Image (cartoon, rainbow, N blue to C red; front, top):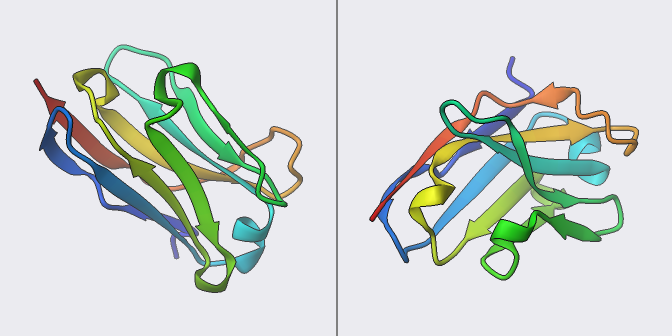
Length: 118
C-alpha cells in the first residue's frame, strides 16, 4: 500500500493555477515535517516547499509569492497551491515525509506531472 499518493497534476498554459494534493496513509506523516520536491528532465531534484511540524514554511526562491504549501491534519493531506505558473515550473512533483523533522525525507510518493506551456 502506497504511503503517500499525489494527485492534481496536469497540463496548463502559463499564468494558470494548479493545486497538488498528497494523501498520507499515516497521520504521523502529516503531523510532522513534509515537503514538495520537483525534478525536471536532465535536472537535479529540487526542494520546492517545506512545512514543519507547527506550520512554519519555507520555499525555494523561484516559487516564493506564487506557491503555498499547507496541510490538513484531519484529512491526512498535504497541499501545494501553485499560482502564476511558468514554463520553468514544468516537472514531476513529489511529496515526501520526514518523521524526525531532521532533513531526512525518507517516505516518498510516486509523483504527479505538471506541464506548463508558454
